[in-house]
Length: 475
Image (tube, rainbow, N blue to C red):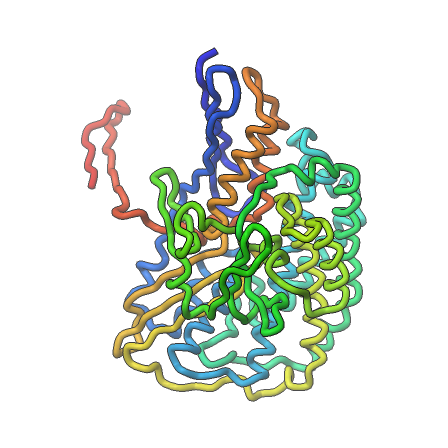
């Protein structure tokens, strides 16, 4: 048998576009596997020259799945450019918006994107291995999942006027208060939605119990982990310091977001527009790490709300004193964060100051200043870094997006699963779906994560009426 290349294009049930190439050797065994991210946005470059206060609206247009994360990270960077601390009511409203996005994003991923593999099986017919198959299999649960996502989106809409690309966060605070009517409407649904999240946890844990060996070995590999923590070392999604732990779970670094360049560097490969961030002090590839739900729960000492903390303690038992390594456990961690987000929404809505109209601390941009901020997006740590000139216009922008942090891990995961399940010469569809499922564990958002590597090629081809090439211009 000669060597063979298998291409999976596109990778399904993710946000954005990617392909996987699996290279088999002459014996039909997997030799090498790559996750290629081909789409390109270039938002950093065309942000140059824009006023810094436009960035909360510009950057969230990168993506319709996680716009709130970019919206808030840009506003936090604007706070730093102003040198202003938003009033506490504004911070409460920002965090409420943030938790709502975690609800809609985590809920959608587990029930709509990952769920078909777990409920229907990796080898199920692709025609039914989707959200419609889930509806047929368990219509009541599917309807509850729709309601969960709606709940998160409606909070975003009540705060920011739209469910996608809201308009509320501005440098120095927010631009509108929360009404009592909207507050009460949000609070009325909390208990119902927490029950849905707990049903999701029960479903996931039942699947893990039934497939214990697969869950333990599926794309399981040692790595370092990164996530934000509060002053007590607990889970922090809106604000905190960035902590890096090694493969044994030991803390090796903790730093404020403004110091990210001293700790994070980026590697590039010619076969992907998505960079490979790594811990600078360990170098590439020894310094590669993971971010997102699994990583966050591997670096924190606890979760600040009661139900999520109880489930977190059960989660940590899986590692028997070490980090939980299996990529499928990203789904479990995601559901624990979903519970936390719902409990935190309940806490925020009970704050008397959340109805205050003291919501902005305005001030002129400091000439030549710089604003650096980080936030935990649903998919992992998100960093925005802007420099402005004497007129408050962006002179340089750098974004390190959650999915980028996980690039090394996703490539490691697809290769691990391909080597475990893909065998030639004939390749079953279910084998390839398992490789795709390794990517889904990380819930990548590829549209907001890509950057240029050097100069972007451009080619214009002029075809005649007969289909022949008449002229080709390239740069």
